[in-house]
Length: 475
Ligand code: GLU
Image (cartoon, rainbow, N blue to C red; front, side, top):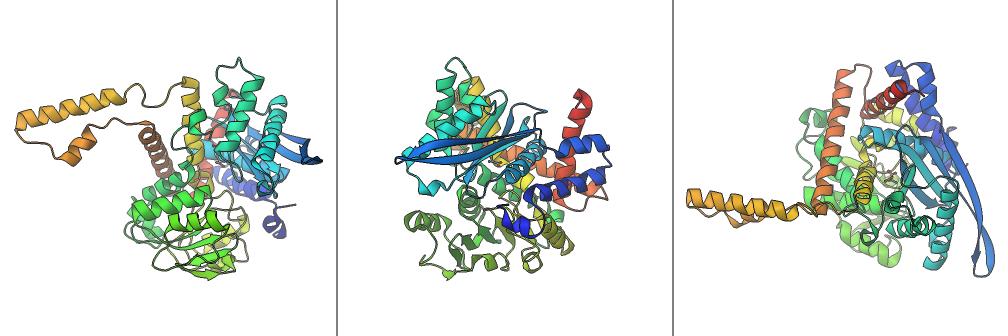
C-alpha cells in the first residue's frame, strides 16, 4: 500500500472516505441498499503499457475508476505520481461524486492515476507516455466527452490535457464535441479562462463566504474579517499557490508559513507568496529563501499557531500523531483527503472547525463544468453579449449625466461601461456556486441536531442528492 500514512493507521484512504460516508449514512438513517450502492466504485480499469525511453522499454501502469455514473459524464482528474494505486484512485473517484453533488455540478465521479515520477522524464517522453495512456483509456471506454471527462490533478496540468485531447481528436475526427473530452486544457486549445486558478480561487471564495457568517466565525473562535488573519499553507503547487496568493493580495491575509517538500519558511510579518513561488521555480525548493526563517522539518510547522491552516498538498498529512498538536482553530482542506478519519475525530473533539475537501477544493470541477459547457457550445463566454452590455452601460451613464447635469465619476463610469469577459463570468459563476454551497452546508448543520460539523453536513447534502437520484431513476 503506497499511502503509508493511512496504512500506518490501519486504514487505507478508501476506507477512510468510506467511514466518513458510513457516518453520514447512519445520521441520515438511509435505507441499507442505497447506502451500499453508494459505497462501491461502479467500475475500475487497470492498464499497463510499454514505452521506449532512450532505447530501453519501460512499463507504466495506471487506473481510471468510475465511482458513479448516475449523471454523465463522470468527472475527475488524472494524477501522475509514484504513490498512485487502485485504492487511492477509487477513494478519489468517490470524493468526486460527493464533490460534484455538493456544488451542484451535474456529473458523476471518476478519477485516474498513473504511477510515474514526471520529473524524471523529458517533455517529449512525457508526451509519448501521456498520449499512450489516453489511447488506452479511450479504447477501454474511460475517456469521452459524453461519458468520462478527465482533468488535471497532482503532477498533470494544461499541457497534459492538451496532449490527451489531441489524441482523442486524432482517433475521433468526426466527433464534433471532441474538445469536451478533457477539461483544464490550455486556453488556446479549448480551455476556459480561469480554470488554472480555479481550485485555489474556490478556496478563497469558500473562506470569504464563511467570514460573511459572524456566528460561524465565532464558532471557529475567530472574529472580524479575513484581513490580517494568519495563514499557514502546506504545498505551493497550483492549488496552494493560487489560494495563498489571492488571500494575501486580495484579502489582506498574512501567510506566516509555507511548508514545502524540502522544509518550511516562516515569517510572522507575512511571506510574499509570489516571490516564494518564483524562488521554488528557480531553485527547486524553499531552502535558502532570503526573507524568512527556514525549518528543515516542515511537518512540525503544520502545528504552528495561526488562524487558518490550509493543507494543499497530499492526502493523509494530518494523522492521530499530529492532530492533538494542531493549533489552528480553522482548517480549509485545499488538498483531497489531507486529514485521516481518526485525526478528523480528534480535531472535532478539540473543537477545530474544518471546511472539508469535498466542498473546499471543488472550485476546479466547477470551472471544469463551465469549460465543458463552453466546449459543447463552441463559443467563448461573453463573446455574444460583452459589447452589448458595454453599450448599455454607456447609455446609463449618458442618461444619468443628462438628467442630473453631473458627470459620473470616472471610476464608476469605467465599471458601468465594462462588459463582462470570460474571466469575469467564470469567476462570477464560481463565486456564486461556492457561496450557495456553503450556505446550504451551514443550514444543514444548524438544522440537524445530529450533524455537528461541516464535513458531515456536506456529506449529508451530497448523499441525499445522489440517493434521491437512485430512488427516482432506479439503481
Ligand atoms: N482534479 C480536480 C479535483 O480533484 C479537478 C477535477 C475536474 O475538474 O474534473 O477536483
